[in-house]
Image 1 (cartoon, rainbow over the protein chains, first blue to last red):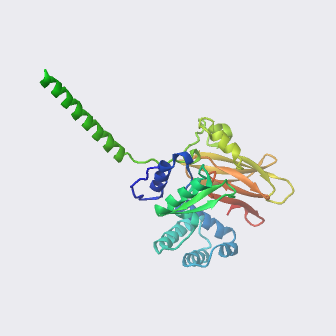
Image 2: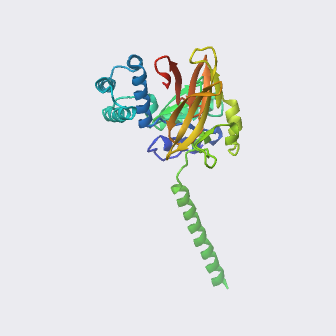
Image 3: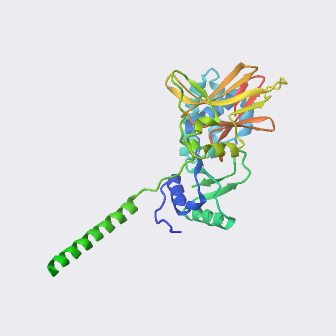
Length: 151
Length: 162
């Protein structure tokens, strides 16, 4: 295996390096992050359907309080208006460094379970770690086993 | 004559060196390409004058390995579950749409051929499929991943995504 000396600038470059260095493992990127708009749509939908369950689902952080306050004082707002406002709240939260959702991160990817022995899998994981990312192995995921890579 | 021979050898050496140099530069500058699974890139085409298409395994038959990927997965384009607890299972089918300049994916819920609701997700017209687990219905936009939403039903709100 010839290791690349390139330093990845983002998660996709990191995955390209891994795919290039471990071609026999036949790794492919299988899942990308949710868009910010989609996250806002989901959260708007959830609070409109069941506010109490929304508040039970999400930890009481500043952005959740802001969403709840806005929703409670704008009961007549349309779905699109709610999404627009939630999108702004999410942008502000992320600029403060808050984690809004694990699915929102543009520095994470799901990848196929690499082909190879467990020793080879460990080598791939070690190399991913060396490039600055971490791996969660999800062998029993409902949508199919995969690795979650966070950079 | 030896002058001609020397010139010929020099020329060969110069061309070889230039060739090596070019190859080396090309290799260094060639950007690495990330390999994405087909379900993240393969757009489904709608037939002319239609706005919706329910997905089928044949929609991806031109993609190498797609049929076995789908067959080896637990995800399906059509599933059944009784989310509304009326004793009759509803049919959930995934598809893609494009209308009024907007495109995306959808799930249509029907019962006895009656359309109950269409749930939409704006975006590209890509693979999306469903999974039933203990009667719960999950809508995925990929395989071997965790990107999904749950389809739920409540007396107050009807069908919704969570």
